[in-house]
Length: 352
Ligand SMILES: *Cc1c(COP(=O)(O)O)cnc(C)c1O
Image 1 (cartoon, rainbow, N blue to C red):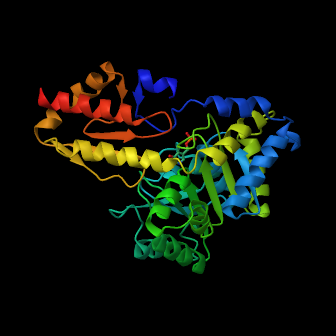
Image 2: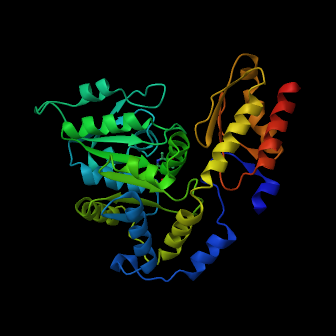
Image 3: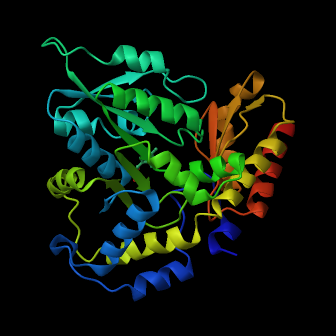
C-alpha cells in the first residue's frame, strides 16, 4: 500500500496525492525537449492523447487548472465581453477573478439549483441584447463535477444547445471530468471514455486536471479547436505558462490517463462507505456523495463542538477541511483502512 496512508488519512483534497513509484519511473524515462519550441515529445504526446480521447483538434498542457480556465475565458472573450457562470463555479469564485483582472471580461454569475445546474430560463434571461448598455454575452461556462455533483447529461446537452442557439461559445471546467465520466458510466452502463466524450462534445473547450483524482503531481490540459488554442497559446505565454522540459510532468499526466481513470470508481465507493458509516451519528447531516467528495453539515448541538472537531481528527492523523460544513475528499492515497479509521474517530468524538 502507499506510504502516506499508514501515517495520515488526508481527506482535505484529491490534490494531495503523491506520485506512485510507477508514475515516477514514467517521469524519469520521459524523453524531453523544450516545449516553448514545441519540441518536447512527451508534452506533444500527452496533448495528442488527451485531445483524441476527448474528441478535440488539439490540447495545450497547462501548469494549473486555474491557468487553463483563464486561457479559455480570454481565448473565448474580448474585453467588455461577459461569461455566464455559476456562483460556486471554480472559474468564478476560486480563481481570484482572473477573467476580470487580466482580460476585462465580466462574469455574470447565476445561482445554482440544488443539483448544481443553472436553470435554463435563468441562462436565457441572462443573455444580454445587442445594445451599447450591456456587456456582450459571449460564453457559457459550466463545471462537471461541481462540488462532487454530476451534472445530469440531458441538462448538459440542453444548456449547451441553448447557448449555441444564442451564439454563445461553451467552456467546460472539467477539472474532475473523469470523476463525472465514471459516475455517468455507472448510471448508463456505458464505457467511461465514451461517457467522457459524450460530455465534452457538448463544448467548444474543456479544461481537465491531471493533479486531482488522476494523481499526477502537476498539470491540466485545455482542449479545443486549433483556432481557439492558437489564441490560448499566446495567453498562456503572457501568463507565464510557457514551460520548457515539462515532458517530465506530461509523462506523469499521461501515465495517470493510462492507469488512474477506471480506479476512480474505488474513490467513489469509499466516499459512499464514509457517508453510510456517518449516517447514524446524531448531529450530522450527510449529503449522499455522487463521486469522491462528501459534505457533512454539523447541526444542532454538534455545531457547538465544531471548533474542536478538526483538531481532534488532526491529532489522530486525519485531515479534513470545513467548520460547520465538513468536506471529505477521497483519492488515490486513501484506502478503506483509512476510511474505517476516520469513521472510528468520528464515532468516538461524538460519543464523548
Ligand atoms: C482544482 C480545480 C481547478 C484548478 O485548480 P488549480 O489548483 O489551479 O489546478 C479548476 N476547477 C475546479 C473545479 C477545480 O476543482
